[in-house]
Amino acid sequence: MKLLIVLAVVSFAAGAKIKCMVGDKETECADGITKCSGPLFKEYTGVADAKVKAACDKCAGETKGKTCSECVGEAGKAACNKAVEVGVDFSCYTYTYNATAKAFAAAANATVCKRLKATAISCNMPKVNATAKTYTSTSGCGNCTKTDTHCEQCTKDKCNKSSAIRVAVLFAPLLAVLVNLL
Image (tube, rainbow, N blue to C red; front, side):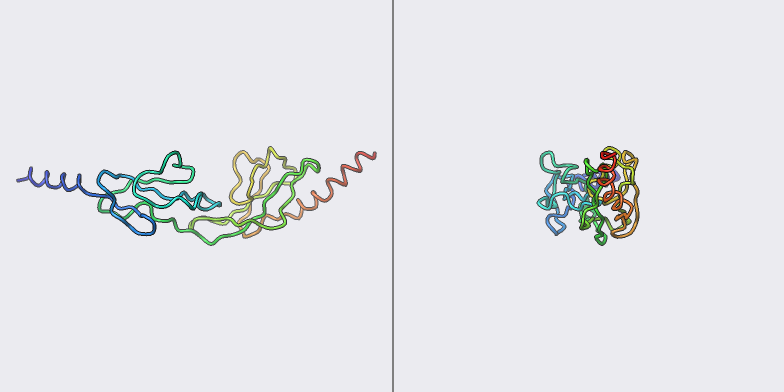
């Protein structure tokens, strides 16, 4: 009797199908499908590729980790590839390095940063003596990296517009002219 019960449970489990989000609906997948996939959300950037849709099965081609994410589904449980909960967008200023002035300049307008619901607001900016090698952020959104040794971060919307950087950018060309004249 125990053997029959064990066999029944094993055969039920073997035939059980997982559920994945397909589009915006939770759908039972075909037999043998063990993974669900969907668009990859990159912190501070947002969805990597809006063309990637939630589906049963693994990511297509070489997209895993680039524009698509995968998860392993479990029979009898909710879809593992549900859309992530996003937080309210915020803005940060981007900085570009001016090789002539040997200083960073902030963009006139802030760029929009995307985040998950549980992620705190974080902007970054170059320190006054930063170079293109010591500050490599391209968006101004998010935390400083370990390789960015001349980077500062702050935690409010549009908090990374430094007046010191603006002053340095204005005076750097003037200082270069004065040095050449002397």
